[in-house]
Image 1 (cartoon, rainbow, N blue to C red):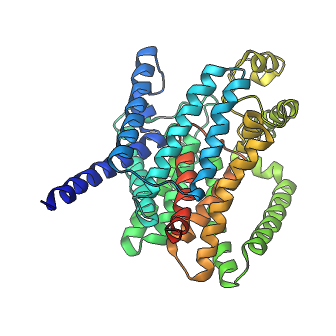
Image 2 (cartoon, one colour; image 1 turned 90 degrees about the vertical axis):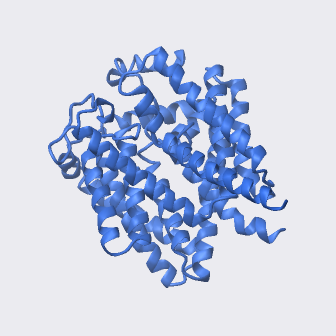
Length: 414
């Protein structure tokens, strides 16, 4: 009589593993690439939306089948999504804010549930496998001529290998490159011998085929961060001292890069505005100052009539619909103001501190990877919109990292 519940639970666990893997893959771009391709229509959009609604419904179902207890340490992300949803009240595009804010809320609930059933090691291992498989499948189908895995570059730029940019099963070439960087970092730490060589070779080739200069730069940031963290942990620096040292090093590197900015941009094939990024940043900061405390509503400004009016006065954006400000900090400042931006920063920074404290008590390769990847996320946020898009793996990783960092604290309170 006692075997049935255990057997049933085991089946639920197996189904949950499949569901969670599909959810993560979809957040990376599988749903976008397969269902929408490079040109979407209303029918494809409808299927895409319904697919995510099914994933949300399954998430709720697993909450019923595998109930969890919510601890005080889990509440910060929930307060954040509460603010996001509340921003519907002052948003310029209320329907969009409510829709996207609701999607982000489901993503956070998914991450909280996931952290109670997957260990840090399993989470990182599955990310490595999903990203690597996505890269292999993307290159294979690209060679076979499937158009959906190509990246359509409006500037017609080629990669350093002389090929057209490839996004694979990721929704954008920058994201394709960035996630390849994260997987490569995981492979370097968790794999060994021929297996590590194979993983790293696949990921590096895909990174080059993506054609993302930002991702190449962030590869250096990620590897440099790993090297610096090893040194600071070995030196037994406190969290505050270590990150003050990091800040000094970053400022020095930025100053050095600025001194050679012309040569660097020429080598990367970029213009002085970083393909319009500096113009977007200036616009975003000006808009944010108009509503500094609570912003314009989550995803409520860009795409609005007010934003279109401003864009018509900027020559570079008259024929280009700006999706975001290409800077996560500015984007969140615009969307949910300084109050929301503070909460945005607290989530990864608190997780980073907890993992760093774990490392000071003894080497833990999983904690080391979380520290290194979170650091790379925080740097990448200056150039890429990674905080916090709805249905996006960047948000899934950061919130999962936070909830997983709380697990030991939660268990100690039982």
